[in-house]
Length: 332
Image (cartoon, rainbow, N blue to C red):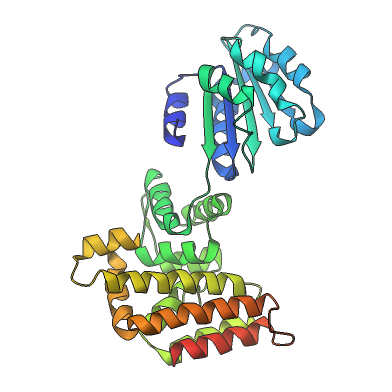
């Protein structure tokens, strides 16, 4: 099942006896387990019918013993195992999962990694319950996720504000959702999140951020590039070199792809680049300013500076100076 299917089922009170929630993105796992914890039972039922275990402090037999019970004055018993990745011999749950108690919801929150798919417990859950893998988003999926998350709450966000958040927060969904909650508190119901809103409430500079940097580079605006370079160099912890080289590498790969898409319509270009159509014009401009041979050379320059930031052939230059040196080369 997908995340949305599981959430819709829970909202419609369609329950399963076992949920194995596993994978690298904990936000999805928390959302599902929190919904089960909050909604399946009402407050008067929870005292006798809802139990929370922690993997490190529990064992399989305790969990099975609890799950085999029947609910008291309620339709369901809810057993949630948090940090199930720390539970020893999780495979010993296989026999229970083959014949789970129908009135129990056993929720296994196995964060940061998957259970070995060869274990019998995985096949048992597939047969009788819900097996869900929480995969992290790729960086290019983050802007759409932000837009959809905000739209579901009845608000909108400008394309530039979306990119400011995506470029500067990354793909940590827990942090993104937390920052969005801050924004929504400070705008009228149904309102729009702008660049000014993001700058004021999250602390991302509207003028000095990764999105504005790539935009200035694409326009060959040397003065603007160097202004941002000096700001980044003075705040290297907020703008780490590893993020800079990764962002710029991704940006120039998109420029190279844009060269291959010459003559295509904007909708096709946006689809291939996996960007909002609003930004296609910027990539077309950047492709004109960076002919294909130059764009390819810049990819090699970025690889070199990424290695230097990690100490390869660099014994003394600090990250702030490396940033200025790199951005000077890219803008001239």
